[in-house]
Image (cartoon, rainbow, N blue to C red; front, side, top):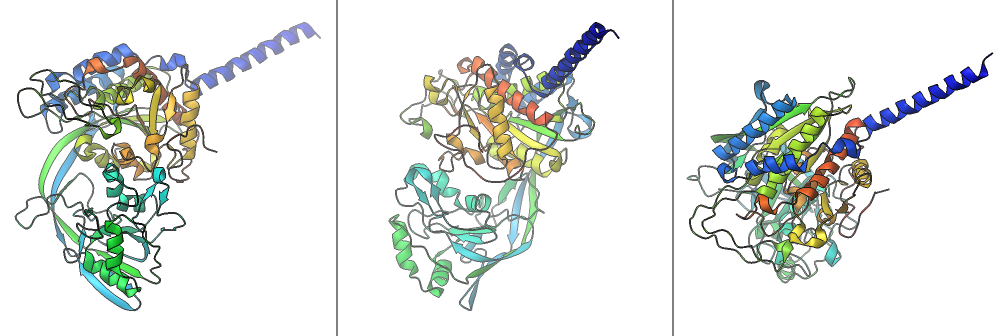
Length: 569
């Protein structure tokens, strides 16, 4: 018996085993060596074209946007990314519909044995896009002003269970609220539905409930029979939507008088933004009948750019990590001469003014918005296509028409090229090339929005990915706070997927003075910072793509916000 030979053999086997484990770990966990495929020089070269004057601001429905799309597609083909658009191309046609609505919808309120029906346009106003025909019967829950705002320690939702109920609220603002909270105030119905899990929402129409009024009807273009288009959409019209209705004084008077409340007194309190009493609506119920027909009177076409890098695992390659950015921008100013520089153009950069524009410069180049996300997504696609493949597949979507109303992402979410139940998560990149407000104190800061809302596990995966970076970024969740007045959670393409229940993360370095202005140019981009952010998105995507399960969807809503960071237990 040769014990030395056996010892040497055993040692070789241990070393081989360790090597296999290390290799498996290298494949499953993105390293700095893998993410180093993301080159700032590449991104600078691509962005120099994407944000050039030649593309005239890449506005939707223009030749400039078409050129940008073709440029992206050419690179995807070069890298071997599989086309995933229409008919074997890299392009998914997005149909933008101009629609007129014929509405017979109504709201019937029943309280203390009394009922009254209000028809659309007669005491209540429905949004023009009401979705599919349906009837919702539910209890009513009075929410006061319908606001939750951490900085003022104000929360109308505290102790409320809205699930399955229809939320109703009053007034323009609330105690201590100012005009700077407009986005928050205007999003009340949507917030009640999405965060409070309400079945629907009823809020005040113009000049109802005090203050300056709050028309949330969404009736773009509503103005009588001579109005050609009531609303524009890319979404399906045959899917049910939670109703958001606005109501006039007559509606509120009937409701509150039936439960023994003086509506005029409530309205007076609301006009002064004074605290509103908690009111028990008792057995008050509502029956909302959605009965609308739609006539498509206009169709315009634009295109998403779509490609797939197939995963390496036969069992997981039919599931996807979806990564996105929008490649459109806002076009050019339609006047000549020196562009005026508005004062305090960005609310979040208080006290700052626009930089001086070059005389005669009318093109909004959109280098940061969202040229930075566009080329970052190209860099990630190249890294995955030419490097080690993760287990799960990756789908890359350059969305069109984000600036016009999330056209491309809303279309993809309603007409997906892969089944949405096969999508593990969506990672959105929008404006990652600068420091927020051009403040050097933000040089290491990255803002994350939405990471915790649908999946705690996804939030923690991204935290781990950042901690593993050679130079971790300072992750800032202030824009994820429900009190964020910019309401960024609803303002970029990730929101279209979150609305379908898909866990998302929105990566951004924040707004600045050049936002939607002719001075948003390549020369102002910090490519070194952009590389670091892009490497983090790559690493997070790789971690999710190598999981043997989807990040758990616990739907616990926003929990991290201003002044908070780190993993969630």
